Length: 117
Image 1 (tube, rainbow, N blue to C red):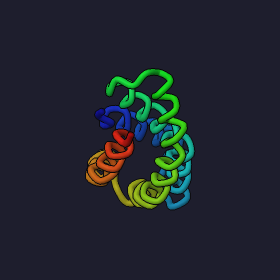
Image 2 (image 1 turned 120 degrees about the vertical axis):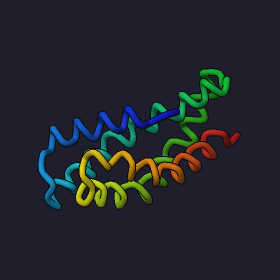
Image 3 (image 1 turned 90 degrees about the vertical axis):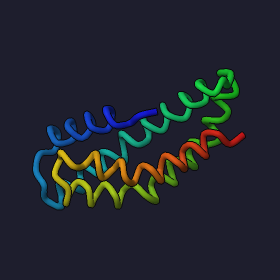
């Protein structure tokens, strides 16, 4: 599952909603990203992977209920710090590249989580 176009578009929306590059602006962007985007993205990603792996709707729902909260909590160990630095220090046109570097590790975790029985 490629997140590049989705995340890149999201960053453009964030910059329109919260223009500016101050520390406060970066904090607002990170809070919106982690409070809104991250939970929705995980809530779509996990069932999509389950469906692509042939899980029934019932099994997919059970897996989502079992794995979602753990994945979201793990997300919060990694991404708020990354995104705060990203939104404050990195120009918009480089943010996706920074996130993709960290996402190699994150996507490995998500893949492992999504494929646990």
